[in-house]
Each structure stands twice: as C-alpha cells, then as structure tokens.
Image (cartoon, rainbow, N blue to C red; front, side, top):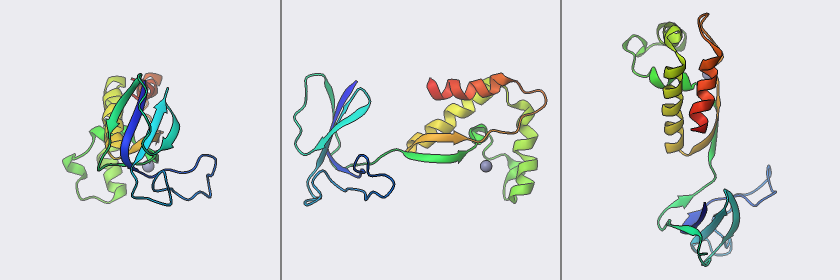
Length: 159
Ligand SMILES: [Zn+2]
C-alpha cells in the first residue's frame, strides 16, 4: 500500500544521522509552521516535503492538526500480564508481594490461547500509545508450559 500523509506537523530524524541526530520539526526547518507531507511506498518513507502531489495509487491521509512522529520502542514489556490487570489480590501491593499474588499465581493458567489474546491486547495497548516495537520479557515458564506459549506471542505479533 502506498500512502501520502498530508498537512501534518511532523517530528522525524534525518536519515543516517542517528545516534547524534537532532529531531526536525517540519519538512522545512527554516519555517516549522509549514505543514509536512510524508510519502510512504511499500512501507518505506520515500519523501518528506511540503505540498507533495498525490500519485494515483496512494491512499491520502489528511493529518491537519495532527503530529506525526516515529514509532516508539518499548524495550521491556510483559505481554502476558495484559490479562492480569486489576486482580484484587495484587492491588496496592509492593512489587515482590504483587509478583507472588498475581503473575506467579497465574502462570499455570497461561495457555497458548490465553497468551495469544494477552499478547494481542498488550500489542494493541502499545500501538495506542505510539509504540510500534516491543521486547517481550516472558521468561518464567510454569513446569507444565509448552513452546506453543512462546509461539502464541509471535502469532499475535504477526496476525
Ligand atoms: Zn519486567
């Protein structure tokens, strides 16, 4: 799919300038009030500018009044815990006590199907907050667990 995002306030980094880059606020850094257009072809940003002309094969997104920025990276998440929020026994507990009364208690119940749905929920929540990349830290497995639990995370991420 090809997309042209138009009229956005964009925050991006110049290609190849990482890690000492300076975020750019708009396509024309001398005039940050100018709206920015972003052309995406086959999942790759191919052009950033102002008043880009739409191509026939592009989906147009009017981002007037919106800010566009690169996807955030969450380097430490526990997707399985997406379905363990609000367990009464864990409310208002310190981390150590909470670990024992919530996640460790429920590990035996984390089936591949539940893990799939927990991962989907967690990934949706991350997307809604701007994170497009996630490192899942599901490293404790119950004795009755199976490799399918891990496979379920990948299935959720790629579905
Ligand atoms: Zn952790």
